[in-house]
Image (cartoon, rainbow, N blue to C red; front, top):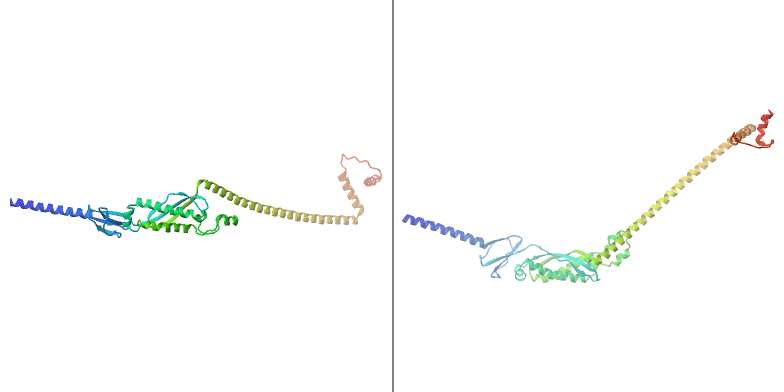
Length: 322
C-alpha cells in the first residue's frame, strides 16, 4: 500500500506541475503582446487608459481579462476626399477632388476622441472639406489651376499675347492654396491626436455645362491655329510656285535668246554664202534661184496664165530659142 500511495502522490505532483506550467504559459500568452514598427498601443482597463502608450516596437505585458490592448497605426494614412462642386471667386463652378496624408501622433488623445480609423476619417471629412471650400471660393479659377505666370503652351504655338493678359496674373497659385488649406485644418485635427502631413488637389475640372463651352472654345482656338498654319503653308506654296514660274520664264527667255542668236548667225552665214555665190556668178545664181521657185510653185496640177514677156518665163524663152 505504501508503494501505491507513493506512486499516486508522484503522479499528483506531476499533474500539479504540468497544470501549473500550462496555466503559467496560458497567462503569459494572454498577457504578452508584441508591438511592431508600424503600430502603437494604448492599454485600457475598464475603458480607461492605463499607463503610457507603447510607441516603440518590442514585447510588452498586460493583465489578462482586465486590461485591453488598443492598436493604432503609426505610419502615414490616406484620406481621399469626395469630389465636390465649388464656385470660385470669379463665379466659375468647378469639380475639386482632394487627398491628404495624416498620422496619429497622440494615440491616447486619439483613443479618447475618435477611438478608431473610421471615425477619424469622418473628422477629416468634416475639417478638410470646409477648408478646401473656403480657399477655392476665395480665389479666381486661374489661381487654383496654375502655379506661375509662365506662358501657356497655346501661346507658344502661335496664339496672341492679348489672351495671356486676359486670363489674369498669378498672385497666390495652387501650391500656396494647398498650404493654406493644410494650415487651416491642422490645429483642428491636433485636438484628436492627428497630424495633417500634407494636402493636395488631385484634380480640378469644370462642371458639365461649363465644360462643354470650354471644349468648344478650345476647339475653336485649335481650328484658328490650324487655319493659321494652313494659310502660312499656302503662302509658302505660292512663293515656291512663283519662284518656279519666274525660273521657267528665265530659262525659256534665255533659251529663246540663244535660239534667236543662233538663227541670226545662221541667217547671216547663209546670206554671206549667197552673197559670195552671187558675186562669183550672178547669172548662175539667178538661174538656180529661179529653178528653186519653179520647184516650189509649179506642180503637175499647176495652171499658169502668164504674158510672153513675163520675167517668170525668161528661162523658158531662152530654152525655146535654143
